[in-house]
Image (cartoon, rainbow, N blue to C red; front, side):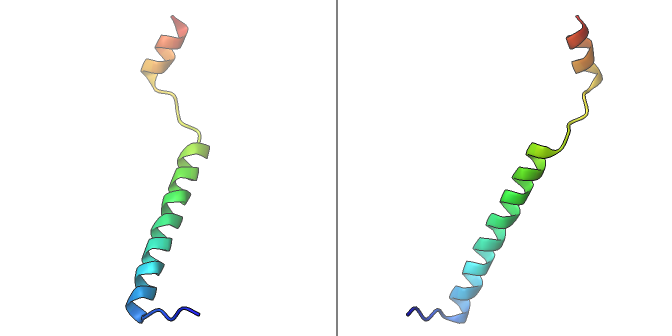
Length: 46
């Protein structure tokens, strides 16, 4: 099958790690509740 060098394995590990961190941050941003600011509250009352 494939035989990757140690350097190639490290590069793949870094790429996969960055993808995992990116997906985690995206999901966290989508699911966390954002506090409404005073300006937003005033606009919604008008």
